[in-house]
Length: 195
Image (cartoon, rainbow, N blue to C red; front, side, top):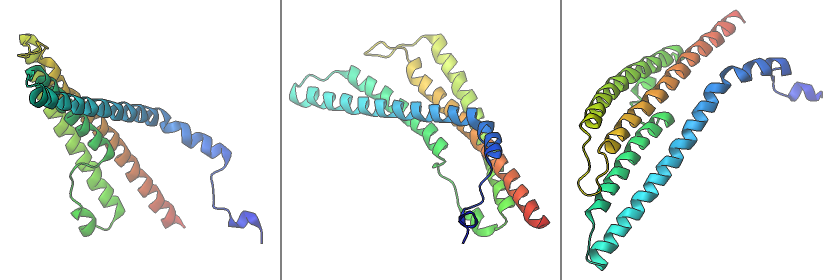
């Protein structure tokens, strides 16, 4: 028996060269964003845990609580929440229904529905991001400071703007992926119809 017959059909070296670099920049950007978001979530989560532990020690052991720690803890909690919102969007682990795959069996129609949902989500996130940015500009213009630490309140609002920006970026990536998936399925169905 010939060994070449057992090997799966792989694209030749020339075909691989044309396929790989096509979306390399997008993949690299997505990898960098993923790495940065995970690092920021770990940093803010650990910082929040340390602050809460410190506050418990100061309140119940030393009996001298500092309200500034609570302000900083709220800041970190808000940041980790909005970072998590962006990361859940990237992982596509946000809440969504699965009834479409039970009702529709045509892969092209399923991908068309996913593509439409991605566009709707992208539009919705952009609208919410616009209002978050508008509110953020209002807070920055007023130059309000936090009560105990005297930090700019814009730090809290910036987390919301950043979270919606992350969601918009990842929904844009998903929309592009869904569109490519539609084209690939159509190309496969056209090739199978020719054969």
